[in-house]
Image (cartoon, rainbow, N blue to C red):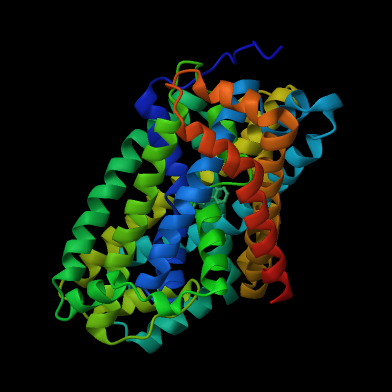
Length: 437
Ligand code: TRP
């Protein structure tokens, strides 16, 4: 039934893995992870995070890749084709909507990254006090003449990559961006650890404090894994739909997960030692990246160089993620509306830009979009994914799909139990207790 391979597939195995790593590695790692760690007691959070990666992150990533590869279609058509009578298409529509909303506010934050990159490189930030930097950032959200063009520029870059197609657009860009991100992060982390007092920050980060583990920590860890692993909105599923049958899905999922975890830890090893060294309380939210860190850079010798490297890295990480969100919707429009890829990318990217305007003009609108998408729609999308794979498409069919290209092992038996019982119950529990506050 689902034999018609797509005309376009990933050029190479490593290209696919780099692109999926690119989707996962983004603002979520560099900004959201360090703040979440700080809020939840450092080492205590890391232990829970590792557990949730193993029990939830890797299994759902495997499930999404298997779904996409089995159907070779966009997310809506995947749920339609693999479920009875097309009745599950709504689950795909939820994913598509989430992708579109996340793209809209993600592009605003990424646009700020472009602004700070230019300001650092041109020496415009040089010598600004923390208070001045605070005003600089506040001005961004009240001065539409900067934030809106910056959002437009970032969206245009995303459209340019996606319109190039899978191999010549998305894959090619990630061959460049991913190694660049890892090199820049490593340089920055070494620099941060060498700051006076930097090592104390690292020790705080890595010291387990089991007494701080609460339900709330579990909840935050679950949300963070969804966001950081790009799960629950069809991005990994769509990338999986361009995979050949011979690809080893579990191995790919493990490599991507390790890379994402590694980048999150490296980012925390930049941010937290730097904060410790300068005795700064980490700001929560985007203020961490756009006020606190620039203040730290300005207090270091060679401020403009470090600041430029950091924002270049951040922009690269954001771009490799945003292309995966746009691709979810573009793949759907290309498959089902018969538009060519170029037109589809421009139309969807243009639409996402319009929807991003409230977020570009108001921090409150951005926070609302983030809450609705990240705290409500992502867990719902994740829950629908595991229920569909475990009970509708069927764990047995799913397992057979995973075993194509991968040796069967007893671990896949564990995977089945996780997908059918453990993960749905965990998400439902965490979701309900989260909503109740
Ligand atoms: N994972 C990316 C980050 O960490 C963001 C992202 C890309 C995403 N695709 C996604 C988040 C899909 C949720 C769902 O910044």
